[in-house]
Image (cartoon, rainbow, N blue to C red):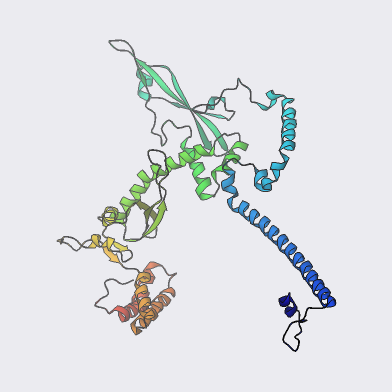
Amino acid sequence: MIAFVYRYGVARTSSDGATPEPSPAELAAIVSTFQAELVAVKAQNESLRETLLNLSHENELLKRRIYGNKTERTHTSELQLTLGSLLDAEKQLQKELDEAVAKAHGTSDEDETKPPADKPKPKGRRDLSTSDLPRFLLEILDEDLERTAKRIGFDESLQLMFRRGGFSVLVKRTAKYELPGKDGPTVLGVETPKSLFRRGLLHSSVVAHILVQKFSLGVPHHRLEQHLADQGVELGRGIMCRYVEEAGSTLGATIVHALWQDAVQNAGVISTDATSAMVQPEKSKDGQRQACKKGHFFTAVVDCDHVLFAYTERHTQEFVKKLFGGFNGFLQCDASNVYDVLERGPPQDTDEGVSLVGCWAHCRRYFFEAAVCHYPVGVQGLMRIRAIYAADDAFRTLPPAKRKPMRDQHLRPLIDGLCGPEQRRCVP
């Protein structure tokens, strides 16, 4: 009691040092003060309790948002994710509602919601004979057998074909002939022309149409599928993807391969660079997905006429030699040592061979690093390279025949000032 009295400033000290008891009025004032503080503390506790409850609800909501996807994978209903434990108190009501819903479904006609049992499930190749598209008849005959043998019939095959004006069904009829012989007649069939897609459902004209729509006009397969359905052609995006993949493989094994051979044998200048990319490998034998691996794409601009691409798993000298081996022109590339195998090697009797041309952008990096380290030669190199590009930009639009003398006149002195004429291997 004395401590409380001292706290509220009502303590008194007598002349002999003893502390007298407080009067009733003073005690009443102390009690009134305590009661007021108690009310304030209760109000503060109630406010804190409300704040804590709100924070708990907010934390629960944030947890639902963060872990909602994982929780849904365990077949938790959406209502449980939203309301949490509130549904536990309403199990009886939920049971009654489920029974009412089940009763409503039980009174409906189940035959209307189920597909007919006698409808066969489509299997295998689509039957084009039932299509309403116009027919285009093509008979393949043999001129020699037409004169010496007896035609006994045709073998028919159907393909989806695209011509100007729309789609149609190609009816390919291959003639069969009967030839007499010592042991009896022999049946011969006409050899069919070679096809890009052997025994394919789609004619090469349809594949070409898909490729143009996809890569030239930017129409995705799912949208093209809808456009074809409006024209009465049922062609799924899965079939389109398979044919596009096969066309790409065939194109790479034939036309692209021939373009690479022509570039190595006849091109004058090839600009190349390699870019790494993450590639998803095929699944393992047990069906598990494997981690992505780094691959490399080589890009080659051949005489400014066409652009070729080549993929390799490893960025090595062996692949560079396989790709550009035998090339005798100018190969513009970066300073990677994988290209050294093209220029170095056993001595040759002639001076013919590839000439490696460096890249100004890669060369500029070293001057920039020197400039960062406060070397004057680095700043001077950056200034000279900038002047070379600025001077070359003045006659960039000129044809090659006029551009070369202008470069000899204006760029050659700038390059000699940077490297020196004794170190310049080729002029731009």
